[in-house]
Length: 208
Image (tube, rainbow, N blue to C red; front, side):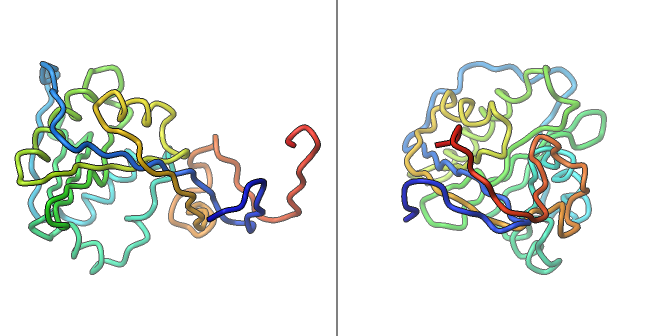
């Protein structure tokens, strides 16, 4: 466990406060209509390049990188597992959203990745897609549906999950290599998160 107070972080690393949330019984999803022009498609054994492109278009602003750092075989092992369901929000023949459900742990479902591209903002697609996630997760014999989000994600993400019926139950700290410094993401990704290449960490009195 981390001690109270400040902890130094090595140059080139990022730190995220991670909140885990769970749903132990189905939450009523309401009647969010399917947004005009959008459909949700189950993508069986998705092509890896197709998946990485969609993952980047959704997650680059939030420094999503874990799937981009996986070797080809490791990523295929996950995405082509019959217990992992990848669904894409389709608009005009192009994937513009991702909903990934992982049923590999018996009796549970993890909402592994959930997001939309910028093109979908303001179309009511988020609530509709979450309703689809809840319904699909609980259509299987599970007793727990869970998700995690972090402080690098969209500022609206945590509140959205809570309003969707998930209950926070655990908080963790994740430290990892800045994907912009190791070439996984471009250097200009997520400008709201400064890149720290080196130098001393100084804590002033105003931070005490």
